[in-house]
Amino acid sequence: MKRCVNCGESDLVRGTQPYTIDVGGRTFAGDVKGWRCRSCSERYYDGRALERFEGAVARWLAEHGYQTGDELRFLRKAAGLRAADLAEALGVSPESVSHWETGKHAPDVATRNVLAALVLDALGGKTTTKDRLKALRSPPRARRVKVGARKAA
Ligand SMILES: [Zn+2]
Image 1 (spheres, rainbow, N blue to C red):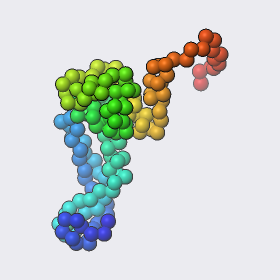
Image 2 (cartoon, rainbow, N blue to C red; image 1 turned 120 degrees about the vertical axis):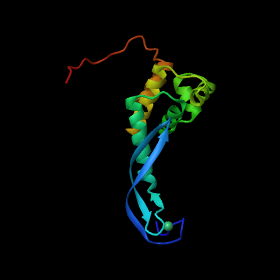
Image 3 (cartoon, protein in one colour; image 1 turned 135 degrees about the horizontal axis):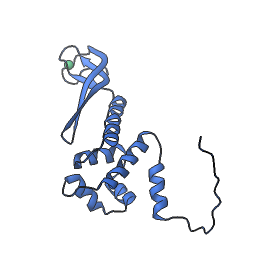
């Protein structure tokens, strides 16, 4: 960052800056790496640090629970899913996802749990839930399956 977009000064101080996001009527506050203009006090944020902050908000919602359409939309985006992708993963119509997000209908607890799991997977770089949903839609047809029995660790 070289110059303040607001005032044009180049006296920008690097450091963590306070940042908040409002999701579903709740404010999430934290510090995000960025810069502050010494001249006009405008704040700028590092793009990757902002993504990490949004990820932390999504993790909090997924772990603590959520209910509103705004929260659901925020989580869907945090999981990197389009509305059509989420609809397909859950076996519902895209209209259902739209109705949840606009607050016309509320998704049930099981549905909210699946989205929470998708979000936590995405934040951890995993596809466990997505893979399991895919398997549940078309289980293997094998009549005989060999499995290993392991002792619990
Ligand atoms: Zn400035």
